[in-house]
Length: 395
Image (tube, rainbow, N blue to C red; front, side, top):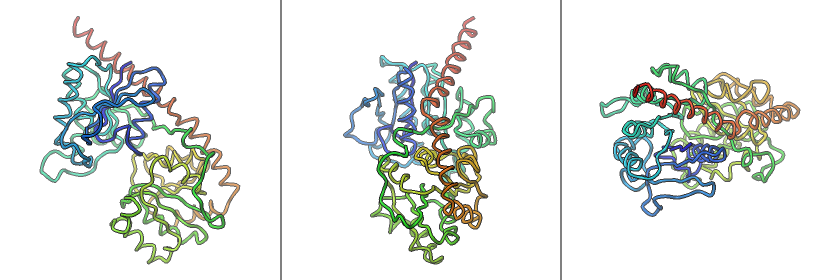
C-alpha cells in the first residue's frame, strides 16, 4: 500500500517527540512492505526537496510560508499553501498514495483539503487536543478539531482518554479507533551505557516540557518526603539557556524555598539519541501531569527497565499498570506523590519486580511492529470503505 504521512512541523528527520513518532511508525510500516512518503513543511532553504532515509522512507519538503522554523501555533495561515502543494504533487506527480495519514490538527486541515480533490481517504492522529480559543476572533482550535474529526475517514486516538476527549468535542465515536504509540525496544533497552551518577543517592528522573500542567512543581514539593534522593529534570531549552527560561526559574525558586535545591538538577533539552543513557541512570521515572493525552517518556523508561510513578490521568492510566509496572497516585497531591516515591526508593525488591514487568509490557504491548500492524488495519478498512462507497455511487 502507498501511504502518505502528512507532518507539517515534525519531520521524521528531526529529533524527539512527534518527529520520532512519525519516523518510527513510517519505518515499521515500511518493514511490513508498505511504501511510505512523508510530506513536511520546508523550513530550511538548504535542505533537498526530497530526502530518502536509510530505511527507504521518502521525505518531501513542501514550500509553505517562510523557509525557517515556525512554532506549531503559527502554522495555520500557511496550511492553504501546504494543501495546494500536496494536491499538485498528487495530481501531477507519478506517485499517488492509497491513503493519507495526517499528524496534528494543522496537518489534518491541509491533508483533507488536498485529498478531497483527488479522492484519497484520510486518517487523522491529533497527538494532543487544543483547549484554547484563538485570540483573533476566528474559530477556536477545538472548533477546527471537531470539524476535522468529522471530515476524515478515521481518527486514530492514542489512548482511551484521548478518545473520550474527542467524543466530548463532538467527533462521532464510530469514527474513532484506539491504537497506542509504540516504543523502539532496540534503542530503548536496559543494556547500554548510563549517565554517571552518585551511587549513594537514589535518582528520580522526570522528563517533559517545563510547563505548569506537567506537574514539575508537584514533583519538587514531593521531594520533601524523599530526603535521600535527587531529582533530575530533562526538558525545556538547552542547558545554556536555562537560566533565562521562565519555567526553569520558577522551579529553581520553588526548590530553594522548600530547601531541596541541592537535590534538584535541571538538565535542559537532551538529544533523543542520548535519552536511553539518562533513563538507565535512574532508579525510577516520575510523571506528575494534571492533564495528559500521551507522552513517550513513560514508555521509553519502561523499555529501559525503569519503573514509573505517575498521576492517574490520561494515557498514564493505560501505560502504567498500577502495582505491577509502577504506581499511580492522584494528580496535584504532592504528599501522595512523595509517599509513593519514598516507598519505591526504599524498596529494592519492589523496584526490581516493577522494572521487570515494565520492560516486558513495553516490549510486548507497545512494539512498533504491533502498532504498525494495527494502523495498517485502519488503512485497509478506510481504503476498502472508500472503494465500496465509490462502487456503489457508480452503480
